[in-house]
Length: 198
Image 1 (cartoon, rainbow, N blue to C red):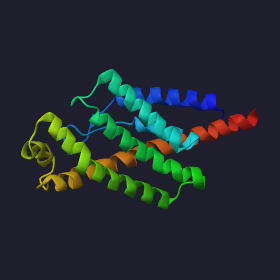
Image 2 (cartoon, rainbow, N blue to C red):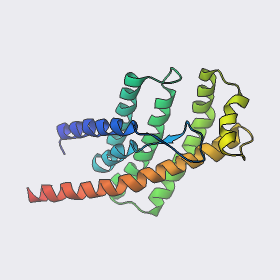
Image 3 (tube, rainbow, N blue to C red):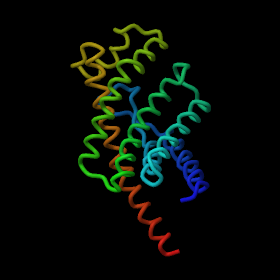
Image 4 (cartoon, one colour):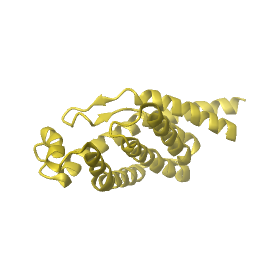
């Protein structure tokens, strides 16, 4: 694939990703502000087809354009930063495995999912959630009430991240892999057949 073709493909996949980002659905038994979408799927396709850097670039452009066009409910682009890091980890990790192994096995998924969950726990615990809480002018009790209403086991901030954010992120990465990888591999086979026919 030439450089022009890669740039065009990244632009097209970014556009698809932005459209899919508009369709967010709430998840039962989770706080209403945690929603799922499949906007990471085009970036995952890009990571499989063109390498992990392409997948990360699609995530970067998607979130940059999203902030420029819609802004952020807390003013600063904290939610876009969180979405970028989350998406970049999802597509980047599996993209690296596929780029160097030319296949994916159970270890690829175990390592990718484990690193993703650990990184997102740390990021939410130390940066994302405290920053959002501060920008919204909420104290800890006010902020935790949203988590406690969806999970009675939540007692403090650490348990909120561990028992709500981590399971949500697990659902997210599994959903993206289940939808995105079969589609990416099928598209790759189609393009390979076409190139061989030519």
